[in-house]
Length: 48
Image 1 (cartoon, one colour):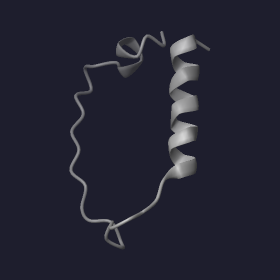
Image 2 (cartoon, rainbow, N blue to C red):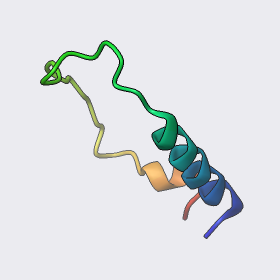
Image 3 (cartoon, one colour):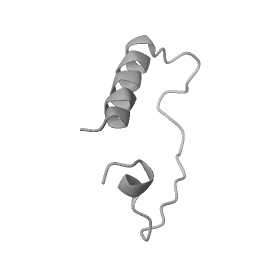
Image 4 (cartoon, rainbow, N blue to C red):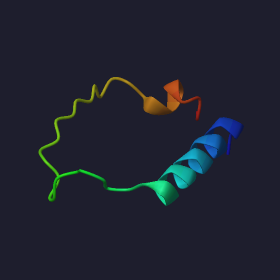
């Protein structure tokens, strides 16, 4: 794996260890997302 990918995984692990739900509503509210299928996220994250 790339150095950047390992750094992202480490940062995610550290964040998840300290994550506190705080004032988030239960259950979570609706989530709106958008994805353009023409884009390859791996290219932008330099994973391929």
